[in-house]
Image (cartoon, rainbow, N blue to C red; front, side, top):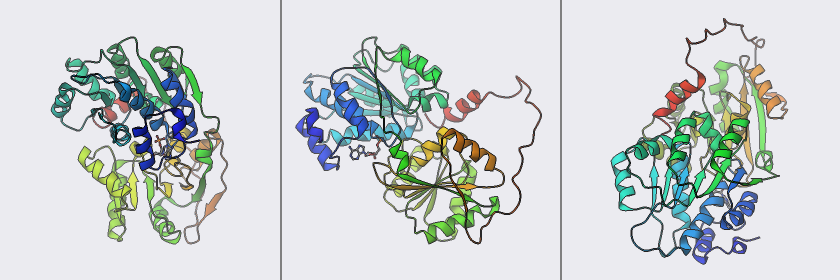
Amino acid sequence: MPFSKFNLCPLILKALEQNDYSTPTPIQEKVIPLVLQKHDIMAKAQTGSGKTASFVLPILNIYSQNKALGKAKIKALILTPTRELTLQVANSFDIFSEFLEKKPKVVSVIGGQSIGDQLLDIQKGCDIVVATPGRLLDIIKKGQINLSNLEFFVLDEADKMLDLGFEDELELVLNSLPDIRQNLLFSATYPPKMLEIASKITQNPTEVSIAFEEPTVQTIKQRAIEVNLENRSALLRDIISNEKLEQVLVFMANKRASDNIASKFRKYGLKAESFHGDLIQEDRNITLENFKTKKTNILFATDIAARGLHIDDISCVVNYDLPRSADDYIHRIGRTGRAGKSGLAISFITLENKEHFKLIQKRSNIKLDFEQVEGFELIGNPIEKQKGKEPIKGKRKSKKDKLREQNENKSN
Ligand code: AMP
């Protein structure tokens, strides 16, 4: 079924065609008509499902029918957890409004870039603001943004927002919005906390979940390869070369490891770069662009890259270090096999993380056979988790505090 059945403006249809969007994805099938009919939405959707266009297209369509003259007023606010996602969503608005007679003015509000420029853009008048919560809140607190004309509030990747510890910021942003508005909530998971927040944001929402969400993940071939910790780097080079992998996203446990291995791979003549939250925004953009345009083939990244990146041609995702949770595992591997393409996800299983991987498998309902690669066979016995002393309450920072500290300067 083509996009034309939604009665979208022909100029938006032209942009869809130009970008090779011929058939709506299941989430778009469901969400687009509901948004056009002015429903509040509570959607369960993973990245890779096409959720961005499911809100961008109807918002643009409604915008295109509005012939208001004079200085632009903010009609839509889209809140996302990370800078990258913010830029990608803003880019979607730009792409799909390309042929509109009156293109909406879209401003991205993120940390790591000049607040002065963002304030100026807002004050000159804009129609759509796409923002991360921290920077938006700074601007709200300065009294420099008028959200009283808002018609749409979109919360994208809401569960990630909570994971990053932005609950208080979200609450404060919500307090600054007009009561009457259309709310579109997107989250990959709906734990009880998320449902509580959903009830604060949306009014009588239509719940949308794609019954066939799993195929996104089912198109991904998952492998678990046993290897000793110290042999992972050599094994990775071996796999990339033997299996002729082209665009490989490799997840690392921390920034330093990511930088170190990228520079080591470059010494081997491989086109590798490192991507993490310590890079200044401009470098992040360049690194991503290099990977998207295939100037580099191997991107070592921390989890900040795990969600929301719109790179369709990742042939393989490697868990060099395992993710902490089953949810993160699903999000990481979801970076490959996007938009219906097949993908490959490889996890390195070491003596140290074997038990952890078993837990991830159990929680994500998967069961993989452990493989070995000739020349890199795993030697030794699994390491039992040492029972350490219980942490002393009050002496340690809570997980939430740590996350907030980490993300205060990075994700905003
Ligand atoms: P998202 O889940 O919004 O991050 O989208 C995942 C990827 O699928 C993006 O790179 C989109 O460009 C692509 N995509 C989304 N919807 C469609 C569609 N209907 N046809 C082709 N590509 C799409």
